[in-house]
Image (cartoon, rainbow, N blue to C red; front, side, top):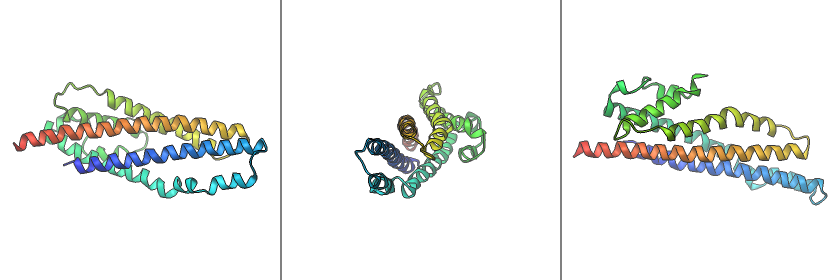
Amino acid sequence: MVTGAATAVTVLISLDLVREILVLVGNWRLYFVVHDYLAGRATAADLEATDTDALAKLVSWPSFLVWIAAGVAFVVWLWRARINAELMSGAAAFRRSRSWAVGAWIAPVVNLWIPYQVVSDVWRASAPRRSVPVTLIKAWWALFIVANAVVRPIQWRMSSKFDSEQDVLSNADVSTLLTALYVVAGLLLVLIVRRVTAWQTHKHAQNAA
């Protein structure tokens, strides 16, 4: 069953969203300290402390592992959900073979659309009625692609070098947009996972009865 995997996905995605919010808080705190420093209300020691405090450590490498764990947990869930959905509706209900449930995420270029196909096919094949809309899947994937393929690279470039207060402010602004995209996409993905899991669990219970 996919219930345990769905719980792991929910918990890990929630933790990763907390990490993203903490990163955002750190970026804005850095801006305010830089602003105060240039206005004479903070010292160089305050600037240095911003990079070495507990919050900065919390959002570094250890918490980055949560992001990796969340991704692995989701792929494990998707693999199991795909197997269940195939048993429910047959292989003909899917546009891609079962191996794409894993390979779609690591294959260059095609990872821009095949993961969407895999998840939407599992969604349709698991639903009680085959005509169920895929609006949630479309919204999640659109936000996910915009965040990772467009906004994230911009934010990484901005955070690599600060030459002025405006650079720090721009980084905080883009970080706000990125966090908003991730939070909404993450919540949609949790909803997708929980709904597919509920459909499959209900179907399994019906078959057992």
